[in-house]
Length: 84
Image 1 (cartoon, one colour):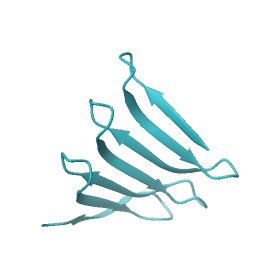
Image 2 (cartoon, one colour):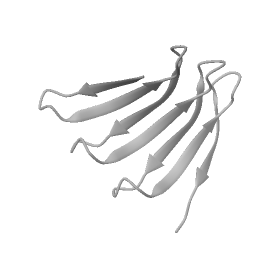
Image 3 (tube, one colour):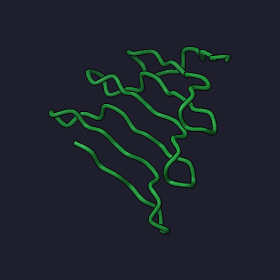
Image 4 (cartoon, rainbow, N blue to C red):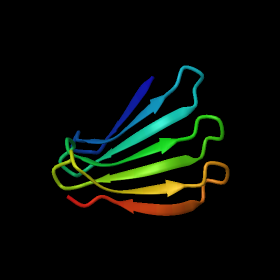
């Protein structure tokens, strides 16, 4: 399932994806233009906690860095930087 949220100007703010059992799988947040991806949050379906948060460069296609979280507690664990 997919749920989309828009701002007052009608631009897309975020898309939320759910699995068939209703648990949240991931959220995609968009920049102010409503088209370019800012970051994606992926969730651990069994615990409901954040698994990773992937940030994109201004082009919305190239990954800049990834925040990783502890799968059991959801606490921040580390950041992986991707250099081109």
